[in-house]
Length: 385
Ligand code: THG
Image 1 (cartoon, rainbow, N blue to C red):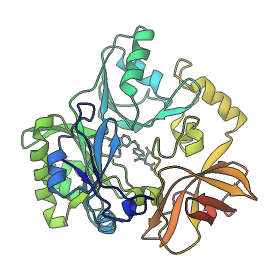
Image 2 (tube, protein in one colour; image 1 turned 45 degrees about the vertical axis):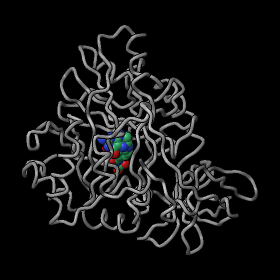
Image 3 (cartoon, protein in one colour; image 1 turned 60 degrees about the vertical axis):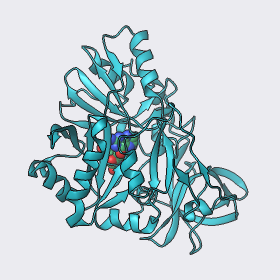
Image 4 (cartoon, rainbow, N blue to C red; image 1 turned 135 degrees about the horizontal axis):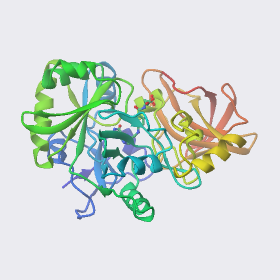
């Protein structure tokens, strides 16, 4: 049973610290690495794609510096794969993704935006092309399985949409390459960003990709046999010992410093890719039947109303993290939202993303209405580091 305890600032900062358990249910699907993360002393979890994802092992600052200076291993099995297989798999991928996939090669991955018909972002997966007629969408936290299957059926495509037994384990940080090379061989050093290879580790079927939700470098090992999760965890942990490996998770602080978007965290039911710095993953020339592209062409022609900037908050003490966006105001008038906020140990400052009117620019002063009172801040460019 998982105890969620107020063990660190992230939790104690909440208005009413709580200790509670997570009730088991078949809706909450187990990670193949679950037992391993419990053995490592996981202290906080969040939900993601109907799974539990570790978010802390109780030492947030230590976990942060391990990612920045060494190597960290993360249970990110909640990044589920939606598999498209069949003669029309490539067509369906291009109908779903607003990025031009025509030159994507087998063995290559690409970060893509999925949008609805209004051009609103509904997921930001990494697409992996496994074969000419087989793709994975390694999804963020929304039900793309439903979406892809419905679109395929409505358009009469010859493609099977499924969720295969595949669970990523991330190895991140400047020493990640040494760790993964010691397990798989030096060929991993030549992998280009988002490229991958299917292989075996001690007989365990995996795909190894240069990827991961940090800018510190690293790989994701996609486990293709859930029953061997504990074994794979142990192999990576053992190989990482010379480099001081330890458990971690997609790191909230580093990802803000680095400017990585969190779908659902930094986006709402109206956000289009241009507003969250994903315009470079939208190719307006993709075929007209790509979902959302017609709306995105209109939005691009008119110019987006909001954009994402960084904010550096005044004051030298870590600000309380929040469950919800905070209003950003200028002269008492709402100008946008603070979508996340964290104390940066490298910048020694509270930083966050400001989804604000395009009338606001880096250098502008704003006020953020935090739960504990108004706080001044200065807008800046993203990334911070
Ligand atoms: N790994 C896997 N699947 C995932 C994620 C992951 N699915 C959901 C979510 N995370 C996808 N989100 C991102 C966001 C950014 C990046 C990767 C996954 C990323 N961006 C680089 C950047 O913004 O600089 C490079 C992108 C590029 O230019 O191509 O790496 O973490 N398996």
